[in-house]
Image (cartoon, rainbow, N blue to C red; front, side, top):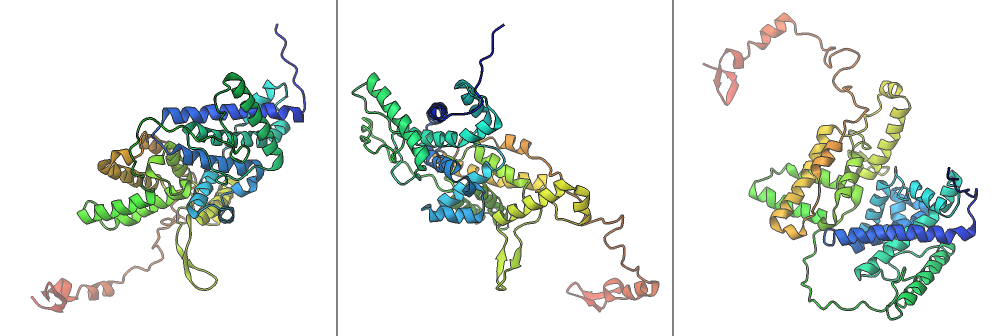
Length: 417
């Protein structure tokens, strides 16, 4: 019988470069293959840059990834535009309940270097793995021939940057030994800045029309469809409500960047929202303000925790229900699908491909905490306390000209034939 290897109990500093290298190579292979398999489906450089920023914060400042409005403002203070900050906040919401750095992969990396994957060890090297994923997304842009410029991604803290530099130097030496005339691929502009410019392509490239943002598409589609009579004017409210949820989950992204994961992120918001949200209220100064989706999600999470704690008590206290109905969920997905159908009829090259709305609709579920409190309460009808009509009141009512004979259709309260 083969004897199992003996694993060490604790991680040592000498183990960190090997863990970093394994995580870096695994993530780089995954991203590069995605770029190779889908060369025109999404704007890979923009996506890689967003993930590089996300993993930078996960490695150094994970508290900023709580998805709150305060964190979004801090992103802007760190130099991001409002759109970029919204996109990073949406990414934070996506990974709020599932880890972007898989504990299973970390456990495999620990076993590979002879360390027992205890909970403490996995937690200790999670930041190392996040930093490695950051470097992999930056390196993937090099593979595209579109390197990340200095300042586009925040630098790592000194210990993690030093570790990344060691891996970069090791990679450079390996490339130089294999092919001395080949320029090494750089991992990070903040680590190595002497990057030779990429060789120009021998094939002329036609300029591409930039794909519109989903908010721009919605405004164009609404104006066109309402003008031609395909959609009634009241459809504007339905489309804008679905659009607001999509942007809350993903940011205002370009149409050709949208993938199945964006639809799933939107779907995941449905069960977190209160059944009634977005209503107007007055602030401390007496001005009318409307509840934002971020505020509604925060309120919904608190309500959901109360319902999970004790549903009977929550119902007795008449807490608002949480989760959009199944009909409403599918309606929002239908209007997002209608926007993509519109642009496919105008310019298919600008439209997203490979989206499976049918699968997302099947994944939608009825919220667990719902009820009919608005119509029935304590086994009584809503208007059960109203007194019945008296007989003389009914007689007086039917003496009105509208029952006995009126002047004409426009003067039905005037007596006549």
